[in-house]
Image 1 (tube, rainbow, N blue to C red):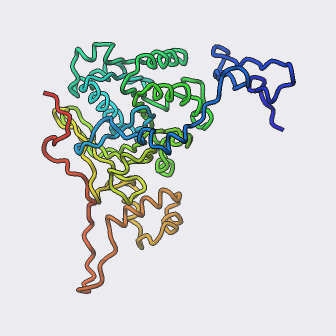
Image 2: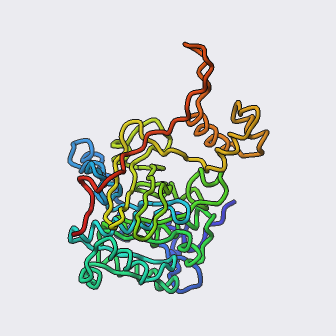
Image 3: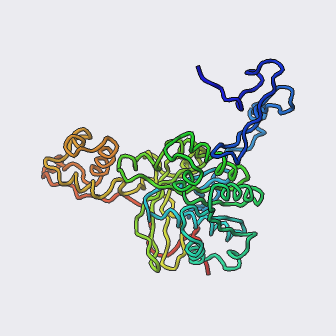
Length: 388
């Protein structure tokens, strides 16, 4: 039989005449404060969804992304929602997040960078300056704030302050540091839910577009599933989750680029404006030019990330003699897991089609083709953020 903690007991669990215990508050070790449970007759009335308003058409339409626009005018991130950027180190995650901050600041908005990953204020400010944000904007606490919390209490105090300030964009870098700072387990769904409830969700509820940066595991099988740790991360995302994959390494003075694939889009606004057919469709390609101006090239029909599998995996399949016949064949001969084998074989077959032995009957193999990607040459196009 499940034991109900004293602080969770409502009137239904109590003997007549026995008062409902008060829930524990912060400052009592690692215990997380919980709201007082509903008790009939105390005035804390339960609120239900207004189905009548929904059916009458009085409710607003579903949310649509409106932060950091592509060159076709479609945005990537949702306000009032928790969004996520995840990928390998140096894939461009932080540049994309900082581009969101730069675009909001350029439009007279307010933004904050919560630096749990210890990038350092100098590094973050230098990057924003290179993206064209003016020094007077970055120096103005009414427009931009940088915070590197010292501990859990400092972080929670920051969340309370930002709720009152109501920024347009909050970038939190990274989730990998958030849970340990709060004394929570990165692999526990319940622990991530606690962190989400007390840090990410309050910021989204005050109207901010929250962009949480996260990492992927080193294992190819785990990487295919998404961010490291618990699957609760995807469940709790109310906006969009974008997988970031480097295309051209980001180099000072030269720029760089990365692919943005949709892992999840709860409201479907970005997915509806992106190519169909892939499990993780390509939303666009973030391109930073040598002068640090940038744009996001929208993916067109048929566009896709050229390789969702590591090059070393494709090379391993190329070296197989005889060539791989199935996922089961790859797993048996290379000792890989199902996810790794499936992704690598799919990309391999697209890049190296089966020889054409019909028609002319020559048996000449088809030349390996490069899947289409968005046009990224030349200078920024319409929709690019350029700073004169």
